[in-house]
Image (cartoon, rainbow, N blue to C red):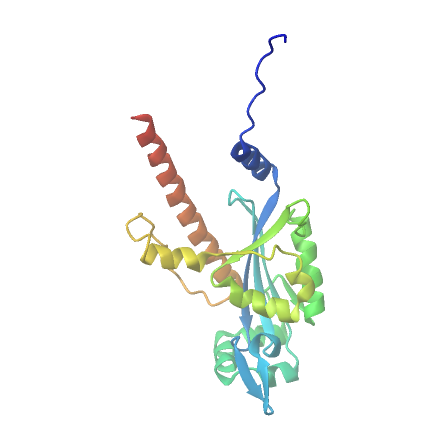
Length: 237
């Protein structure tokens, strides 16, 4: 039998990493202001979920690359009907009156990039803006598209899933919850060197998601530093 060079061994891990690196993702930060909390509430003796009952008033959106390069950010208000205002939890209604959010939505102003008359119009505007920024709908077959991030983002997405299903379907079903990293850096990762930026609590949806983006960037820098230090240590041995 004639001699031949041995076939190159295929490393499955390297193949997987190459595939992951070839995928095209966009990170989309989402934060909302609502007329109440999620969880169940009693309405006319019926038990209903707050995410489906209380109105969505404001949505802050931030688009970034996987390398955390900012591509776009904008704020969308949804003008509440008289019925929406009536449905709001008293605490939420009082807070949004004090902050000026309800007045801004009812009278218009410069606080938002767009004020929608309803959730359908808000969805159309957000999707169009995402597409323009290059953040496309997630494609499960190709594994490309938009992934949501935010602090306790499950809360925000529960409202969007209940009231704006077309927008919810735009994203990967998995989410990047920054609050998980925050809790880990306070507990199991306490000695790893993470330092969460001081929160400013702007109390607008856009200000909150911008703050979350800064927090995610800070954690990412720490992880990159740890990886670099570990790599330098390995070269010494």
